[in-house]
Length: 333
Ligand code: COA
Image 1 (spheres, rainbow, N blue to C red):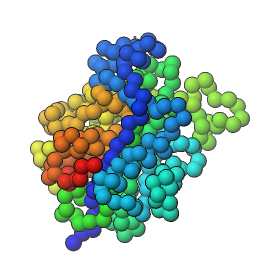
Image 2 (image 1 turned 180 degrees about the vertical axis):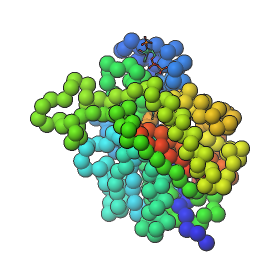
Image 3 (image 1 turned 135 degrees about the horizontal axis):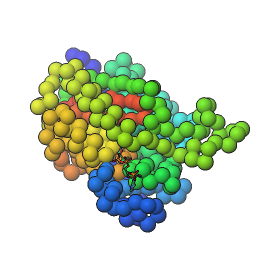
Image 4 (image 1 turned 135 degrees about the vertical axis):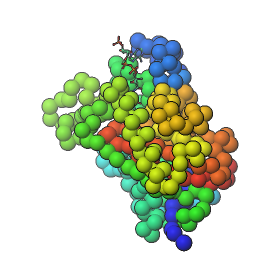
């Protein structure tokens, strides 16, 4: 019997402030039709005043625990590029607020690939015997770093959190994580950035440039990197898992842009209707996007027990990664 990490629960949380494309068009030079045709996004949710990433993460984590029928976890991992503070990590706060104080808790920053990197990390903790249960949460408060003067990024990103509870089990169980393929390319580090606030460009001393504490992205360059890298890693992970593309029932890619999701499906030869899409309702929620999509699709009965699911993400760094699992039958919460 081979020890494996088994997905046992999912949860998600979207903050209450719904922002439509028309709301954005009232504040900047853009339009509902531009945003819908270029990105597929109709609306997104933003955290209310005073709400931080840990507040979103706690809600999603509580749901994931409940869905798994668990009250404890040995590890809490938060994937985020928008932590509550640069120091300390957000995960210890989340763990304590969930009543899991004492558990190991740390953050992962692999930008929009953070959740897939987190799955590999959780799998490693479980298969090594370091943990029996890992609560992995992707959470972002992008609204805290969006530049109101940059229409090319402000219209894309949303806030939210999604989480999964992974438990120790057997490799032949439904929900067991398969192999994971991860990669990075630091040559592209400047394509997706928040320039100031780290050790390279400090907030202390000489003041940063006027927009350097905001998120910035070279969208067009990122677009094709995203399609190419996700397609390559999907093929690599399927080969490692001994599965074929025509066996994929559900393609769950990072919700970066509807056109990226469609190009990826076409590139892989997976019918577009097998790709989960919720970017129209939530925007790009970064590290939270895959677990939010999983939680919503599970709650709606779109994901069914026994389906072969291919997960793939791409993000700043540059980073990318993919994994596979067979969807388990989860309790509805
Ligand atoms: N509203 C209206 N016009 C806009 C706009 C907006 N919100 N944002 C940009 N434009 C304009 C540009 O100024 C440009 O005008 P110009 O031709 O007069 O110079 C025009 O639209 C085209 O801009 P471009 O950036 O080339 O558009 P695009 O088709 O590449 O779409 C993105 C822009 C950002 C939507 C697209 O590149 C993208 O989605 N990239 C991937 C981003 C992503 O997913 N990142 C996360 C990865 S984890």
